[in-house]
Image (tube, rainbow, N blue to C red; front, side):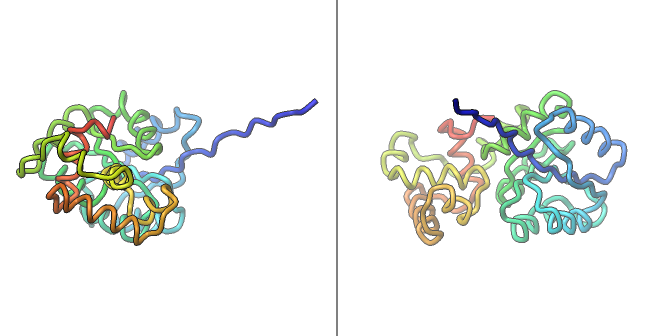
Length: 223
């Protein structure tokens, strides 16, 4: 008789960055209701958050945009450069397409409004942890509107892309770096860079905002 041991899945490791202690405590309480999530650190400013991210290498950083030292966009940029395997979920009061544009361009994996946190935070964390892109329903439409250039016709644009180019673009739109995409697909980093560059050129895109807009319109990114 063979005995099968069931192993508990590894908890998603979360770092929280918010300059309001009461808000931080509330977000932590919400996160801790999920037994599959572990809070590994808390920071009240951007520099402390960056230091803790380097120390603990969390899976996800839940990041406030309005911070007293470095604004959230700057923190996100540095997180992407210094902790490329860490995904970023912006948690903010701002329903502003300017912030959304900047953060999507940086490479965040989620954008959630604080007023939606009570009902949506667990869902957002799960989506981001699974490699998806989460956009708060109140701002999701902005991702389609945020880039001025007209999208290529859906069927035409996709017909020109190879399967591998589509796979790389989906990962890039979800916030994965070339290195991360290469590891997931089992290809070289240079190959991932080439597939992405070639696909972006075929579609006439220059920025990640344009790519995310296209991905949303194609139904690639489900929140």
